[in-house]
Length: 328
Image 1 (cartoon, one colour):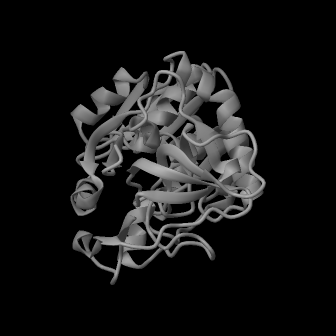
Image 2: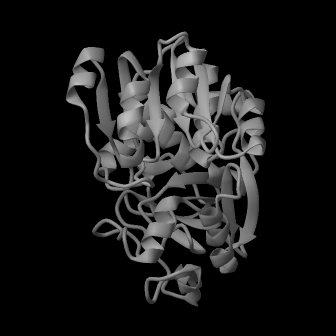
């Protein structure tokens, strides 16, 4: 098979489409013939040499894929060769084939094209696990999403609205804010022109956000705490603005607030299986009913993954950037 390899860390040109050995599914795994994968910030970090795969994971980038089951490993039941699936991965999505633990496998939702299904596993698992399983967003509460036009952001808007929450977003242009509004966002904040703390305070009559989903990290830490409501929950899932910040514990105590930080890639097989089971139970019906949909900016041939990385790093996209293999 062919896969995107990284002979030496570097810029987008470091991604090389090369012939590599086929993976072999182990106990409790299936072999998926990949039709499409999606580009995530973690892939960029891996390409740059800053985010190595967990031990035992595929060395190739790619944290999600969609395709068809090509073979079943020992002990696998409930799936058949030819089933159309999408999957959460620890790596290996930028390839024509990948071995996947069955707990991280989901059927393609009704009404979703197979290629587009690659836009779903990582964002649905990240949003559902952080916003609902950890931060426990409830109907009537306010969610603030930083990077509202990103893949994570576009899914967070839709899921929060589906459960009856109010959604505030930050984004970097009027066009991106308009796309967020079209998905249901109620409070639109241009972070280049406006202070999100002041705008959120104004829009909520001083109450603030009950839950904040943050991809920025240290740069926003102090202001995120200021923006939290009493009993608010800050969920940090990215470090685009740095890893080290100062936390005002007094402000946190006064608001009886909580700060959590999680990642998905390094979790155990059991944890990932539990998250995916929750996604299948709660999110898949919303997608099948048309309430929630994948937001895809563009699809690029996988051998041109360098171009897809350039798009992601430019932040010119809205939603997900996909990679299509010759199997598509």
